[in-house]
Image (cartoon, rainbow over all chains, first blue to last red; front, side, top):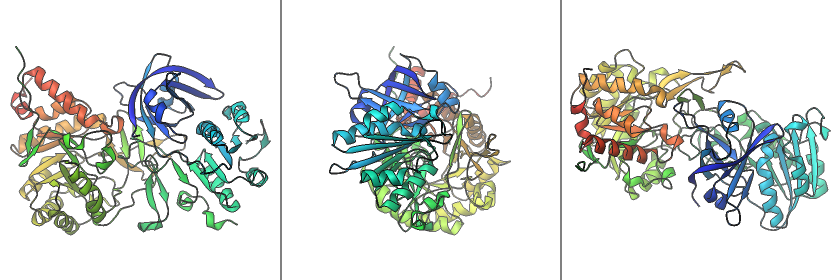
Length: 279
Length: 310
């Protein structure tokens, strides 16, 4: 289905640890949304002309028995997210969606490891539900700077066969990076797929670990974005191969992503070690 | 009394447009991306993202920064090159019945001429827009529109290579815009597009570094609309009869009317499409309502209704 613009009533806004969760009534978006896709939300509606902000879809309730709702999770980092954090039930927000390419589930049931960093864990719960409906085993590895910045660890525990937690400061789980326990987890579960969402350095590291283990890996990137519809060319990521200058081409993450194969991204051009240079 | 019916159609350099509201270059991709959001054939026209002879990769990220009532961008003219454009997007647009304005960009007058020649025989192009003013280039010398003689040289090369009407897109980042406008019209430009983004810069004070990877970028959105309206007014006064496409922060029908009142023949919606994928359609609808409420039957009547003396 092509994406739509909906003027959505706010159903609920709540705190989710260090983050904010916003649930809006968006029946057409909720009907069509797939895990990994995003919505593009207008951050206010005044004469100061705020741009939209992209958010991965955290949860949907399909329309039918329910109203048809979409939930997003965000960190208050600037004026736009501050405006969104000030929304109250019955306020109206302008939302485009569902946008972008979703995660691709395996064709046959397989073990899947879902790796999330901070609020980047948001789309992985939606994905876990779909994978489990497809009879896949799901194991979670989540990390954050500190315990309060882990998103819904209890929910991950409920949805997954196992949950591995890491924090930079050791305030929850083991101290370190989310990628530290990943090789063991992949080996122990015999996983056939890795799905990851979080900051770019984490996605680069997860792609490296997965490639070294020979496990296909899909990552959902977060790039700055103006339009969300493919017309502004802001949200590009260098991808390989193809014969354009520099050995890679700039792909719009709103259209070709936000989900990419970990092996498709030209990590070296983003300042990270390339996958081939490892192992 | 029922208001007179409004006909939004206008003549731009001999080309009949369904409405005087176009999609601005660089703000509507190559048109194809928007086929799911609007009826491409119903728009006044689509000015494509600028096309060069060879593919261009564009700048690294971040390419965009939000600023008060607008945004900065430094995309760097990413495009697949003229051959891929002709084989893919142009063919699609022609098939969709869109009125296509092909935007050209080159590093030398000779490159512009070759591009115009390459596109001259292609079906489906109504007009050519010469991008003389993109601020996101590697050398300021490529911003031809900062120098009347250089701008005129490019326009002359394009005119010699194409039979299509030619719009020259100029920048307000000059001391004497009228001098540049006069030079390109004397060199054969059939019309003008005013204005491109204004060169700007924004700083991330937390990290103490520029917010754009390219350091500087083009400012667009409602923040620049008063500058754009002033430019259209000045040039329309100095060069009466030269068709002008006004662009800069148009997000409503009233915004479009501002430009038409001061002498523009048409307007182009740019950054507005980033917030609202249907902005080009909705601006035209808003303009129609404005004209109907004012009892004006055609957008072409607006300049004669403008009261310059307050």
